[in-house]
Length: 437
Ligand code: ARG
Image 1 (tube, rainbow, N blue to C red):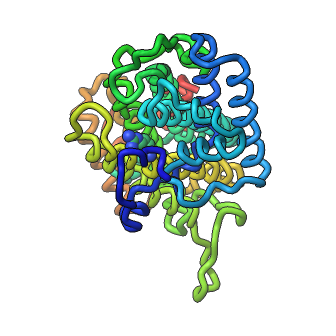
Image 2 (cartoon, rainbow, N blue to C red):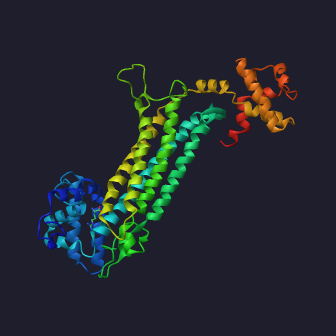
Image 3 (cartoon, rainbow, N blue to C red):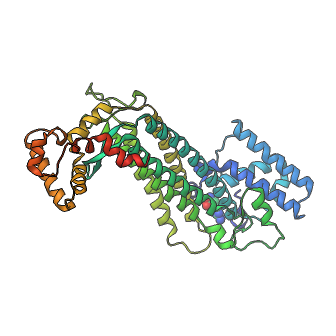
């Protein structure tokens, strides 16, 4: 019989039973479900609702279920509606009638809410740790490659930068991503256990106790909000989405850089794949998959936002849809962070190739204009003069730094010998980006 079967005369339709069941995916919550139940039982005992003996029996029953699941001796499957029914039914099977007291002063509404908060908090911390590992890889790769490369705007070569500076831009992005998650964890750190179905309970319970026992800062302020709040999942998934957007932008650059057209990097074999027909190909599949999976995480966020948008207070079964979206978003983010760290730690930077690209791109043109400004020419005029120099160089297939003094003088009298050192790429870096790193 179902946990709620008492009020029913007829059997549930099999189609309905399958449609309603969440066990296939909420089985992931078994650990949190048992931890939550143990805290609840301890609280009931402290409040004299259960006896010490009952408490001991229930806790040892729950512990044995946890142990058996962890060791593979109890498989989470069968005709159970959800993980809560699975644990409770198995508890009663193991310890008998006293197991039926577990659900005193509790509803599955606050039970699932506390399970999800515990799970989401733990997983958000895991994502933060993976971000730390990625940051470390980025920092090392950046430090090892303090070499000149073209910087781009509009994907057109713009000014000279270093590979280190370029890569450290992502370091800054991921640092913000982690801060956002840390903040979300702080905001969500309240326990809904004890809200019961929606209106609390007539028993004298102690929500402060369970909140503390479960490692939350405090209990939620409002019962109806406590059981129906899924903001914390939306917030985490928003943070995941921004993080994925950063991973995707980096992936896009890695894909471009590893093409023959750019030829700035070589991906490690460990994170590349080949073509079944074109023997010469080495494809950046890992980066492409991260870029592709970004859409999937955005999709999970959109899905839950849409699920929640019209729900009246308090709990509604629609909310069961939160789980697959959050689980999938979390799994995706975690694997993408790990793959990105692996990919970056095995790639080689082709500094000669980047230098060639810098030289061919007139990346010191802005500095030539700055030079003329330094000699008294208004910037707008200097911009025009350098534009003409670039056309001249293109027509003659040469670079600004390779023009003779006579050639430069044709464009402006202000040029003197010091122009060559002023526009040397290393010197321009010293005056610009090097100030930052
Ligand atoms: N499986 C449900 C969920 O994920 C658990 C809560 C069920 N509550 C209820 N009143 N039917 O939301």
